[in-house]
Length: 281
Picture: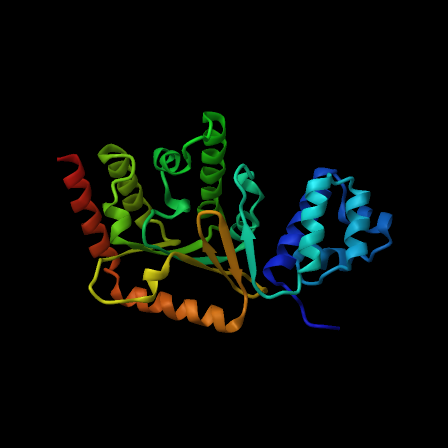
């Protein structure tokens, strides 16, 4: 048997197939019988461990009566599922919950994030989120919808099996003042609160005259139980998922460099309190 695939696209394809099956209220064995596929094989497809042929994907989508747009998206994922890295475009008006990243985040066991300019999404307050998603031309209903989606993702940090989350935040994110003093002070108090959680490690990286790999932008390393890690890079209208061993090693090394420049957690807490005092003065 060939080794597992588990590339970013194969996992996204699996997420989509499973979502389509559940949307129809169809059990895995029921779908396997209807399409003459072994249940174990169908399970491997949904996990991204194996890649079905295009005609097999088309058969599943037809059985589940998947709409044209989603059908085309999943067939495109299947066509390129064996490619190790993935650039995903996010077009204006695309629903925020379509991104595969939400599923990667949901299924990860641990994450390490570097955020130079913004507080990470998993730690944002409602008002801070609204300031980010309220772009010109975006209506209030869409702002509300995107805000709720982002806040719902934060449940992953709680519960019986919470995500182990390590985050390094650039000083400019703390000093940016997004939304004004009141919004920013509330956001920084939220960070102080999260610092006390046993599954969250949070440290501030001060501005420095030294060059370092974090100057090139934010990144997140996602770890999974039984599956290879993925590096996620996000820009305004596009995202990239990296899977190559060399890429993973490079971003882990970058995180190690940033950690060497960061304040300790107690010093990070003191720094946050100082900035809050300045904002409330």
